[in-house]
Length: 411
Image 1 (tube, rainbow, N blue to C red):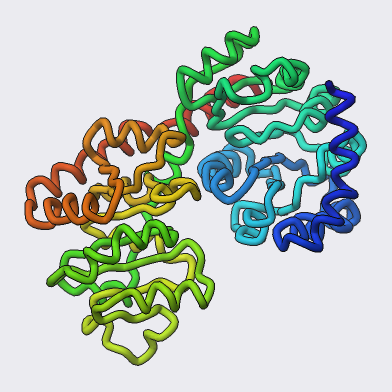
Image 2 (image 1 turned 45 degrees about the vertical axis):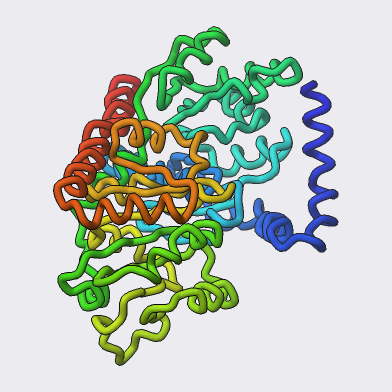
């Protein structure tokens, strides 16, 4: 099966180039890897002593932020190189104060892995969550470069546990240690014969907990909110907006911030047309008194995390349809109740917080209206629910510290 995998991966380069004519995302995938090695050779020197961190996309990068902060403190003379698999991750984080070099991850052929590691020569490698690439892992093992899985998640439906994917288990030997999120992942690793496993938790908790210590002030949101109750609807898709629009239009003396996941002009226009109360977009706020409006649409990026600090309630998008639930931990860290759609079974943090009664799942617009009415009219209920959410974050931090202690002993 390994030969079949390598043949498929080698052929994928040709296929992807052709498919790029029909898909913008695939075209970006191919274009981003153009001249990748020559760019690396021109900007990366082995003498710079790199630590390599691989993140599949933007979400995994956010998981890695507290790890990078720790590594910068513990190893101040090392540089950090971050590789992304997806164009969305790379495009959104081409610059970051903790990162010395960003790159796409080359396609997982043996030759690419050898060339990549020959250029970078990392002292350590960290893979975030579950983006496993057999040839890269095998080459790390060959070179005896310590590798670590951070915030790892294993599930029974992964190839490792299928008859056709058993061969991939050998590549996991590259990991010096597995830092996983839950008992299921630990048990699955044990079933493969791995004992070098620790349940450390999810580094995203460390990431969002640090948000409270930062300056979250946003002048235009203070002007918009005044002393009114505020719901922030973050990362919404059209399916989410179908749930929330009726309540927004019929509400009284309540304000809303809507931050759509996609800020394409035509989609923003459609959202704006569905709103029957006074609405203003971020892009049109100049010279306006925002306190006169009931809805503020953030047709921009970069404000959502801090906007949650002003919220009394949060609606987090993605679960009303099948796009995938977005980050519920960002609003939870500010101790506010959270509402989501019904499709969240692949998100254990949402299931856990729902069981604790710090989060509510709704199936339709009527369900959204019902829980929103209760949260707005019952202050004690709203505050108690928010306290549960905040405690959920505080009680699950510490994953990065466990990794730090291990590295301290290891090196």
